[in-house]
Length: 237
Image 1 (spheres, helix red, strand yellow):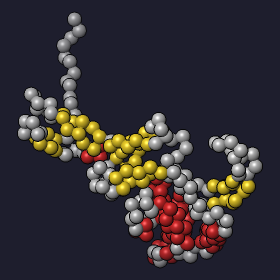
Image 2 (spheres, helix red, strand yellow):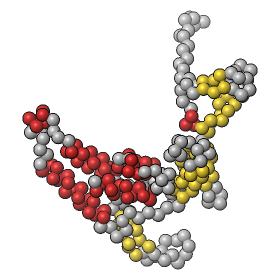
Image 3 (cartoon, helix red, strand yellow):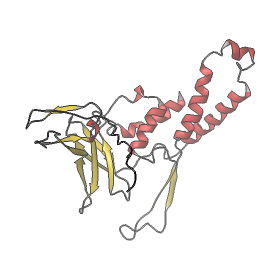
C-alpha cells in the first residue's frame, strides 16, 4: 500500500498531463510507465540546490543545498511490487508439500529493504518536488487539452492525446516556442484514373481500414499483401 501511495502521490503532479483521469484506476507499474512517457526523469532521484546568478543564464558560483528527492524507480517497483504481491496468495498444495509455502527470512528481508527505501523517500526535505515547463494545445480530433513537458535541449518530440491517441509532432521555433503539427499521412485513391488524396492521422493506418473516394465514389482499403515474382527459367544467353 505504501509503495502504491508514493507512486500515486508523484502522479498528482501530472494530473493535467493525464487529462485529470482517475489515477487510482492504474496499477503502480502501469502508472509509472505512463509518467515515464511524459517525462523520462519521472523515476529519477534528484538533488536540488539554489544560488543567486550574477549573470543571467550562468550558474551561480555559490549554491546552497536544499535536499535530495529520493524517488521510487520503475526497477524497484517491478522488483518489490511483484515479489511481495506473490505472498498475498495462499500457497498451492504442491508448494506446501515442497516447503515453499512459508517464505520466512526471504520475505522479512524484502520487507525491511523496501521499508528503508520508503523511509528515505518520505524523509526528504524536498519530497515529491516538481519543476516543469510545458506547452499545450487542444486536440484537433477530440478537443481534449494536451499538455506536455519541455526538457532542456529538446527541439523536436512527439506527443499523443491520452483520450483519442491522436499523434502530434512538436518542433521548437525561432522564438523559443513550440509548434504543434498533427502527425498525418496522405493516401491516394487507387482508381486507375483518379488519384484523389485524403489526409489521415497516422494512428488511423490499420489493416482493413477503408474509405470511399470523394471524387470517383470507389472504395479503397488498406491491406497487407505479399507480391510474388517467379524465378526466371530462361537460360543465360
